[in-house]
Length: 340
Image 1: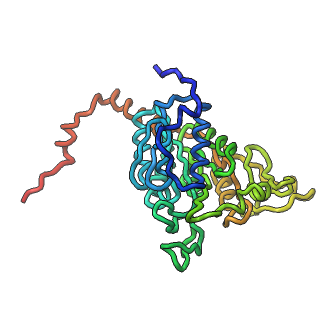
Image 2: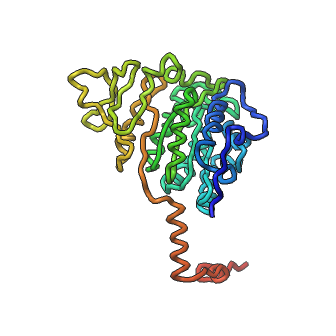
């Protein structure tokens, strides 16, 4: 029998630990947004677990008055998978940075997404390694000069949304740390999703990569630079909604000024499309931090959740074959003896 949900306030979700991030870090904004949102999600603190890896963002579980696990570098999705599968009654949230999730943790991330494990992944993207003092990360732009790339990075960066869509994630979204309302609504929708949900959050590191997203997220530019996606609506943006998104014959998309001649051909956003190629095209619309960038929900589809499938398989096997014999498994035909 489930425990009745207790009424809470933000204060109930705030731990007694001192928040220790650099003054001005975007992580503060994300933390406040999550703590303020939690009382609205109809969940108990003891039914919630925050799992993190290594990095500045990984301190997040310390600041939430819930269960939490501070794991090892890149392995948060793997540990969260075991937790979500063995305890489907829990709400499991993964907190990870761009280096933690997409470098050493890239393999764990894509497999959690393709399996459709019932976890919510918040990926803080500041395009730099902050905890280790400013090395380039898998999302740093080509030519980025850092302590580890003094002549400039040679590599094309990962786009986390593109990576998630390529892994067939069933829920993929993007938001940013300068808009609390947008963050909360995006995270709320990810929380409600059955299966793997990834939310990329543009987050400013004011010490080692200050202003990485200023051209698109500042209050003076966001109206013209952020393309807010709304399911079932033509994709238009701009302070006067004067720009739109259109599709080339090859399936790629581009932006242009809306006119009487082209208005009817604007792309209509369909986050529920079974094929992720349309959402992937939107994720490739932007190639720099200085041009219009889509935010919001790119994809939201339903697919059987991994934990349900696995636990159902175990039940079916037990009903068919009875309980397994671990000793017999160890001593069966799959074992051998090594002699001197």
